[in-house]
Length: 271
Image (cartoon, rainbow, N blue to C red; front, top):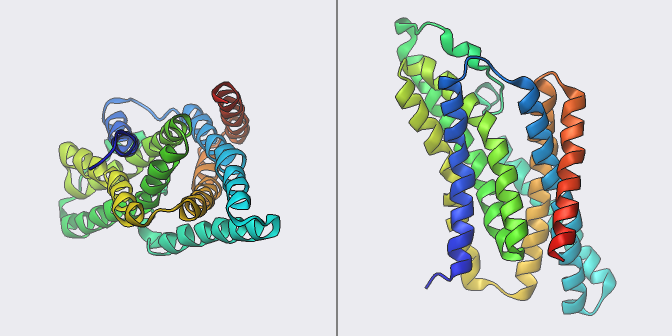
């Protein structure tokens, strides 16, 4: 039986993944790309993830592991190994995505006005489908991160879900634009983009099915350290570079600091 905590974590992952549909809808109805807003938002998302990773998940994991092992040194070693293991996992998943169909290649809403070229329908459709698959692969570990973070605390899980959702809005734009040009169909582009975000609740469900039957206090804390590594990788490899590519570097940094400040205040109030 799924407990209320599990349903809550799965719901958060579904909401975060569904934000790709928001990005896709924005691409279809907005007249131009608000690059200032996207730069600040991506920086904000990175700030939330980085602060939670270091100040909440990783810190608490080390403390709990010290209590479980009775050794400060052993707790440090296990936490560090799990943290860098999370980075390696995210890096390996990243390697599955071909550079030519990188889902984090930025596209602007203005590109939606281009004409569909029927002479390249087959090639463009294949490229669009591969792009959707690539974003789905990328979203899988984010779903795991959202799900497991919700087990740390309600507030942490909600914050991670919001950060991932913000991150998924420009991803929705990035996916829907090339798929639109591959099909000439805005509705199909929206649904492919939205479906690619559903990999996040799938990742959450995989975490529940694979981890929950074997969960123990030791495994749980190690998992939190792994998740923190995954989120740090996502922040440094995806969010901040994308924020800078929109051309407002200072706004991205302001967003980063604001995200950290918001989380610091939130965690103090939840303490």
